[in-house]
Amino acid sequence: MEGEIVKALKGVDVEIHPGEFVAIMGPSGSGKSTMMHIAGLLDSPTEGRYELEGEDVSFLTRDRRADIRNRKIGFIFQSYNLLARCSALENVELPMLYRRPGEPNRREKAREALRMVGMEDRAFHLPKQLSGGQQQRVATARALVNSPALILADEPTGNLDTKTGREIMKMLQSLNEKGITIIIVTHDPDVGQAVRRRINLRDGLLESDEVD
Amino acid sequence: MGMLITVIRLAVRALLAYKARSILTMLGIIIGIGAVIVMISVGRGANASIQAQINNLGSNMLMIYSGSSKSGGVSRGYGSKPTLRVNDAEAIARECPAVLQVSHVVVQNAQLVFGKKNWNTGIYGTTASYVEVRDWPVQEGEFLNANHIRSAASVAVLGNSVVENLFEPGEKIVGQNIRIKNVPFHIIGVLSAKGSDPRGRDQDDVVFVPYSTFSRKLSGSKLPGVTHFIGVSAQSKDLVSEAKREVEEILRQRHRILPGADDDFTVRTLDEYAAMADKTTGIMTLLLTAVAAISLVVGGIGIMNIMLVSVTERTREIGIRLAVGARERDVLIQFLVEAITMSVIGGIFGTVIGVAASKLLSVVAGLMTIISPDSILLATLFSGAVGVFFGFYPARKASRMDPIEALRYE
Image 1 (cartoon, rainbow over the protein chains, first blue to last red):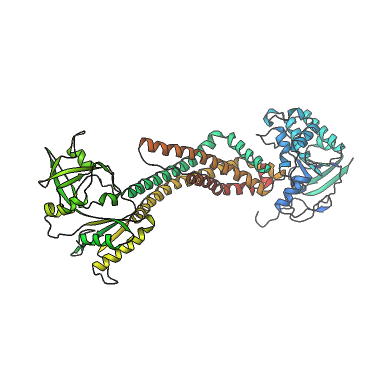
Image 2 (cartoon, each protein chain N blue to C red):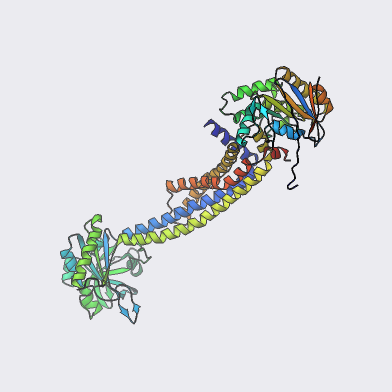
């Protein structure tokens, strides 16, 4: 691998507007994970440009990216990624713990976010006391709590059975209807059908960009 | 502040999640800090008991020994060359304003006989002022007085150990006669027990007689007027060094020592003894504490080890925290606080155990131990420092993780 540069994304030019509900699709190795890492500011592009809310965020320091992730991006993962020893409420509070300046009404805001995903009655349950679908709802509340510009969901239904997966998709749809921008990264065509715009990637190239 | 409380609560919760592991890790710090506390308290106790013995020698006392004789390159030690004389002592009493009392002593070992018992001990030929210089109360009867000295009376005052060895308990002592080198002496007093001197010698194994009687009837000395030791008490504590200077000056003058030549006598103050003892116990305390500190370092390495394991195990948690916006410093502080919490809790338990062990040592083994607040403070700060030092590397490792890699970790 030495000396050889692997270009995961080549000339992919995409613009996503506030309030959109987009799926980035493609088989494994298509570059969709790389796209999500860059969109989520978990990684910086080697070249190219990323603008978030009109601000160039392509090349920033680790801490600066952490701050932007904290304020503008909410993550939903395939395996939920909740802290096992913390209650649902504490998991939702987590992003506010790192918010600068600090958030005085953490508890209140976390409850509000749990209410939005229909989990207010499970606030004090530990993740292991919740079903997969319930855990994903808590994870969604965590993604929402800092009112981000963008929610990035990486295979949010990948670990769930079909029925639960549909429920989660319904929940994401209803959040989108409230004006929240959501990008889902998936290879599942069913998920693709539930959104309004699909960006298909193959071998790091933009294959198609369809809007219903 | 609220943030710090949150972080500490988080750390305590993480430690509680693996109770057995946390306790075993803390054990290293508990033992280390406990050992440091015990060693410091034993060392300080030993020092204090030696200082007490030194003060017991006499208050504001100076000791003057005659110089060392050399024969064929072999130095024979203090007192082996008879350079001090009774009239030196008299001159000191006369001419040194900083000096309060002067006493001089000649010593010889001799056999004592009382009834059917006998005992070998040091016979001190001295003056009436001896007990004042030495701060030594009489237990029964009286000490030698000026009349006894002047008339070279055959009277003796016994030390407590001699009494124990020659008399039955409850037997009448004062007024009895004993024989020293077959010369009959009338017992006029018994001194109170003084215990051992800083070198461990029994100071009570002694019989005092007037120095005049000593030279006429006991020593048969070829060197009349020679004395082995002059004890001097200064007017006050502040005047001890002044008294030393005056004594040295007058003795050099009387012994006709040319400027630049060595003294043929030695003047020691109790402060000098105390300083020597301090040095000895100081080295001992330092060594013991060093050994204890090594166990503390071993405990610290234990913490580092467990923190490294913990960081690896919690890679995913770190990934989540980074993803939702934790900065490097946030993660660093979280793990650092965890290590410090562990070592400080260990330090507190170690202090409690160390204090208990010190008390136990003084009760069971009869050792004098001194627990001072500063050693407790030192131990607590030190355990915190151990946490920072050994927790830093694992914490930094955690904070430098790549969020993408960390989130993928299984």
